[in-house]
Image (cartoon, rainbow, N blue to C red; front, top):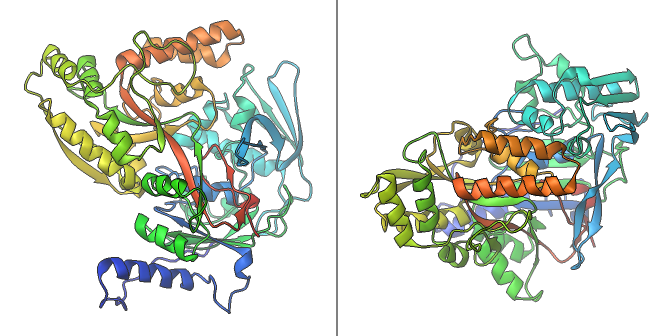
Length: 553
């Protein structure tokens, strides 16, 4: 069960200080209030991990509408899945998930039929939920039924692996679960290892369901119905969420960290100061400027930053193609040529990313992904294309971005605003609170928007299935539809001939370059700051933290 607290207004005891000093001092006070480094702590500081983030989760339930990306972190640690990915070591010693290896988690074993259309999972018979109830195949069946039935993001995600109907899922007996596919799909098993197909305590959820809410969506937003390695301790929305280790967890080695506190500290400067003071252990939102400076210290600074390029992921400038003037491909191409790529690289992300501009003419040359698009800053071309499109005097528009990504996106938006003004486009800037950003993108009405998408499964066709397919999923923020694009994506998902698969991938990449409904800006780095005594960090496909691997030395 959860313990959710909502903050109340109080007199500021630090009112006599300046705003920056007051903000840092208040953050330090709140970290102490979280129970870290005080004599009365139930666990020692050595067994507690204090994590700083810019913005926290807006829900505990990954199946909810408008759930923020940080909710992936919560769901990953509160819930088990049948299977997960293995791990591997990068050349610099960093641990990373292994997309090529699927290992049992809640399932102690699994088998795949010879035709690749059926999967049998044997559930661990000693597994329990956080309330002590046994985990059975009936809970798995209910959880999978929920994921494919509630609509929105979870249903789209399950469909990416051809998991679409409750009839595909069978509880053969209390500890045997079967999945049947209409045809073999290479994404099916990996799709069962991502965040969405979490296993819920169906008995607990049903007790809190209603006739209007049969899947307990409202209750699950603020309550823990899991059986993962960590259980919910306390959640104060907008401030902190804390977890305690579930000592009866059976799906892997018991984690070494007993308690995790994830604290929201919106100011990048305050997060860095708290890390340098040693008052926090990990900071997940390391701004590119800070990461660049700390890397330059070559380990001589107060703490370390581990940086990994985010697989199958891009920061981009999206254009809603169903709205004028962005329904005109020449306008979209003009925008692409107006983007100040070099300034963004130097002044917004400080070199912490791989820029996606200036590909040679005739790209793509291969089927690699992500890869640069054949656009670079050329205001002359941009102006000429606007004239051809019928907008010689430009137009007015708005650039929207997620305030949870403000440290990089706000300077990017300002640079874009200045560049567009040079070709006659007057752009205002809209700052959307992070908790509302996904809902805003669902509305498909933010004409120009800075956003990012990273495919949880490391396949180009998976990225395009989410970002460019005419099904118009949440991550197709441009509302882009092209039947030719759809046909290539759909064919590639089931293609077994590597030559044809490459041709199909190059085909849809070329269409994305020509139609340019979004302008790729850069492939991001995931920069995570850690104290030097913190070990075990693993880069995961969801770009969040898995508490299970951490330890403090």
